[in-house]
Image (cartoon, rainbow, N blue to C red; front, side):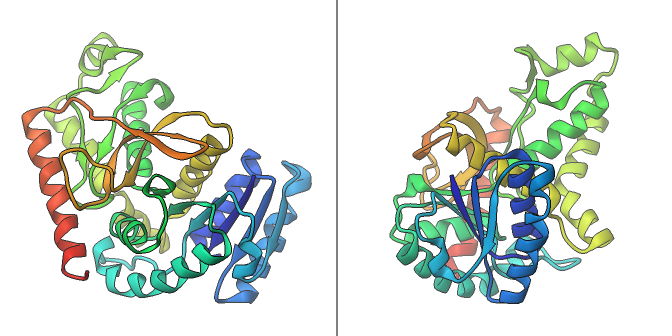
Amino acid sequence: MKVGIVGAGQVGSSAAYALVLSGSATDIVLVDINEALARAQAEDILHATPLSNPVRVSWGSYQALAQSDVVILACGVSQAPGETRLHLLDRNKRIFETVTREVAQKAPGAILIVASNPVDVMTYFVTRDGGVDPSKVIGSGTILDTARCRALLGEHLGMSPQSIHMHVLGEHGDSEVLVWSSADVGGVPLQEVARTLGRPITEDVKKQIDRGVRAAAYTIIQGKGATYYGIGAGLSRIVAAIRDDERAVFTVSNTDNPGYDDVSFSLPRVVGSAGILATLSPALSAEERVALSASAEVLRSAHGARA
């Protein structure tokens, strides 16, 4: 599995490092407008391969993306303290117009994973303008928000987050929707499990977890300038599902959203070797349906104003 990564900054390099540690790729190539940065990141990550997995790590121009199975788009400017993801749109859209054209020419068969923010709007534009089959454009979406939610619930319940099934849907951003109504642990409703463990999920607990998920990026950016380890792991996980044709379900962003036209946002989707194989329609409460519609409208307004 050859994986190209456009953008050798903190997100791109963290994704490359996670791919090496997990062994999800056999060949990784980093491409960046700053060639010295791409080379330095590639050499540094290569030095971890004798201690982890035998992965070829290199750097190069867009031409080096040829024969890539997957290309991760992690280019563009980062979110600054106090800035929302949507504030990045104008700057990153201009960058993506050039990058998408180059990638389409050099790696026409690759599945594209969009990681740059605002990720949903970037995914929409790549799908609309990139000439790529929509099923082969995957925005990282709320895969990280869902992971954050499960991690916080695991802390509250005192159990492994891998056993907790709860989704964060919609925008990867302020309007995202935590779906409490269908959450479960091993097939047992979440609230019932919480009561059994003596750790009830009250409205206050819900608010605390909601704040922890929704405001996580702002807190992390304020403390260290950027978020990258969590999303790096998420990108590596998507690549592994593609490599092994896992047909695993992730909350990732795409334009196939039954009932929500002309927008890209996150719903549970089946991911395998051909990209997105199916989009699932989760059971939602009336309140969650309203919130998801509002999230779609936030994104629709954002990309519509910059079409």
